[in-house]
Image 1 (cartoon, rainbow, N blue to C red):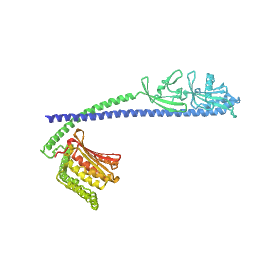
Image 2: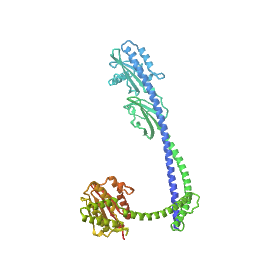
Image 3: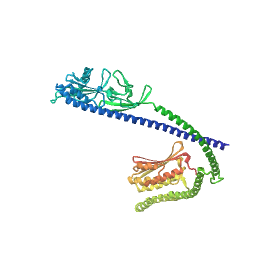
Image 4: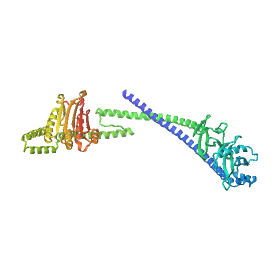
Length: 557
């Protein structure tokens, strides 16, 4: 009954996972298609705006270059003659007709010539309407730009938009005679765009020179509405895309497109993709049900056979499904066979390694120590027989304890007595060397691995005596909180590099070069006390190995 419930639960979960994952994938694809479609449409619209913008800019550049060049020519020749009263109006009109580009209407451009007092002396408009107004505007422009032909935007009292070019007129001696002003009506650039693309040419103060629509024109001065100065504009419930290009220091063009089809495209895409997603979801749901049923059946078979293997009723899987589950069961069978072989080999190796490691650690003895001790005994025999007796006794105790095979573990008190004999030999050899061993009475009968501290003490002596003869070594064993035991070995041998400390304290470290004794000690300690701590510290000239034995790791013999 429970197996059937698990199978049903797994089947539902697998079906849900498949439907959920593929549904998310469908949503992602839907979102991606819509996003890419919108991006494509926006890019296409942007390219159209750029094309129209560049065409307007080119038309303006050609127009401005033509009028600037022509006005320069008039100010050097015809205007000079006319202001010197040696030219005629007929010549000025002839120059005016040459000023107008071919194909443009004559009324869209106006040429006004003023004397140095800004009094109009020639006006291409025969009615001379607003000539005083234009002359006064020329005075305003000249007050800031006397020597340059710089375009300015001007809105007349009749609400006509002009681009104004002004050039000073001087004779050959450089004497100022007056000014030639060209008023170019904004209609000279219309029409330039399609029905979908509109534009404004305006100055730095938003004054309009030329435009294709007044939709974004505001105020009595008919300036561009600043709301248009964004890439995407939402205005009066309508959506616009814009693009801008600077034409000169004080003129720029902005083109814009009212978006009317994007929403329709989005609605079409969403409806189409929703229908596609619904169809896909139904197919996925059906497919997921079949796949879940088949997978649940195969997994149930695997589970039953796995339980039989765990109970020892069989040794291998026997699944004949003809799909991935059969391949999986075959691979598991191969793995089980490999594990069986490895297990048998590891048991044999572990048994041999335990014996070899024990003998190696217990018999690990520095030959230099034995040689140096015997040499010291030989020399002392010449002048201090009593010292020879003491060293022989100490050496005898050290050798006897180290080769003893009575047990794998020993009492802490016995191990410390062994170290006293061992360290006494060094104390005789090195007069400045001294040591202390402190152990609380409650810990003397604590069982520890035999010769647990010897590699640590050897490491301290080997490297400490290289740097100083007055080495001090302190061994302390005490009870700490929660009933744990702390065993520390501290020396004043000059400290250990930070790299060595990190390597010892790194649980994954396998080798340690010259300080292999510390790593061997840590490995042996943690094999015996898996829940305990082995920490190496070094501060200034002192090095400390601190072993904290957890209460649950205590050895009971």
